[in-house]
Image (cartoon, rainbow, N blue to C red):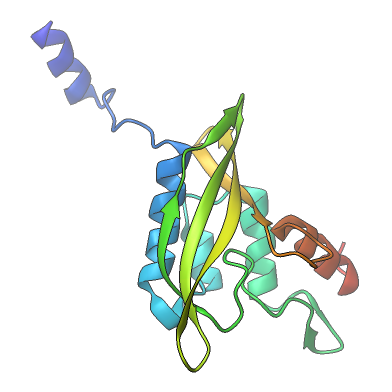
Length: 167
């Protein structure tokens, strides 16, 4: 048995165990929270992220590069990954995933401070992931704030793409 394990290890067949949806969300959002006031990922950082599904990543990058503008105005004026505009995330807590086949939803509590008085608040998001050939990847963010016409990042991206004249 030891010989088989050694052969597998040397051949590269033994890789680290794939991460669970909950762990991916925890790792991704903990890194965002560590950035403090500079939490928004750049287009280049988004492009390099292994945790974002390809189509979702492409839409986020296009939006971040300013491709979805109308008459020179940004159509989306908040961060789609955090649902924040001027707040500062401080920590993230991913809760257990609800997995159904190749899809998963991970509830996320994103702690942040807001305003001049730096009041502490919690933003509740649901992070949607899908199983791809690269493992679990984030493919949408569902928002909980009442009053939003669009309830998820993909809905906002589609609206902005159409509003800017992109097909």
